[in-house]
Length: 288
Ligand code: SAM
Image (cartoon, rainbow, N blue to C red):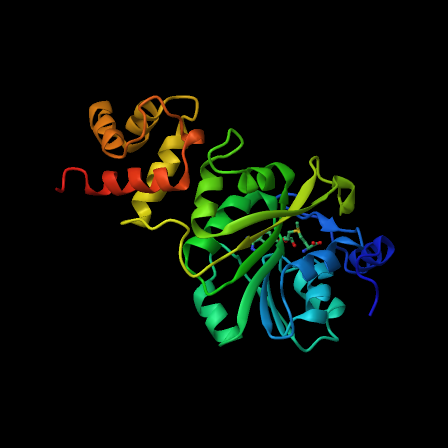
């Protein structure tokens, strides 16, 4: 097997196949040979694990995952890459490539069909134009997945891994923390990719437990409160929530008072538990 992370090999493969990068598909391929083995190892995949990969590109990460995991299913949108992947990963019988859009494919059925009772993890160098929607989709659909290890833009990774209740946190921080425990694994410089993006990247892992980190009456209300609270993050909660939820400031104040949350708080100061109590009181507001 050729060393797929070698820049010469990659250029050769791309040239042979007449491949040109698509900016709109977020095609920045890894050329730093140390990154993929590290990512594969930290994904927690082992010889009993099935791995769902998103956007294999020419298969640099897939190649490393195939060495350590039981089975890899990689979903790639760009059909020009399917024959290339056939060449680069041909020697592995535990890799299946699917030509499809990760935002449209039925992931629950795919995981059931392809992995059966195996433990499943996700590992991917994500196309950055859909970072948040992909992460939220993977988390919201309650897929039988125990960890999600992804390369994202450094800023997005820092936001996701920020501590809830601090200025660096945002709606994505709280939403991700509801479903999982995120952690920053390592940073990757822009020069590790071809073509080099404008920003640095990082690899994060979200470990998913059996239950959400905070019990709430209605998940949709919780996510709506989080989104509204951060919708106008500079404003105090009565203003932000009134605008985001489309209810009067008076009603929001009643909900906050019942939740024992000071009216002058801002979204970035709240704990997971406070978001949970506000969401529960919003859900039952007017029903009791
Ligand atoms: N894994 C490769 C690597 O690390 O070198 C490529 C990563 S590149 C950042 C993102 C990959 O995702 C590209 O191969 C791109 O074609 C693919 N992609 C873009 N949008 C996609 C989508 N909606 N569904 C599946 N794959 C997608």
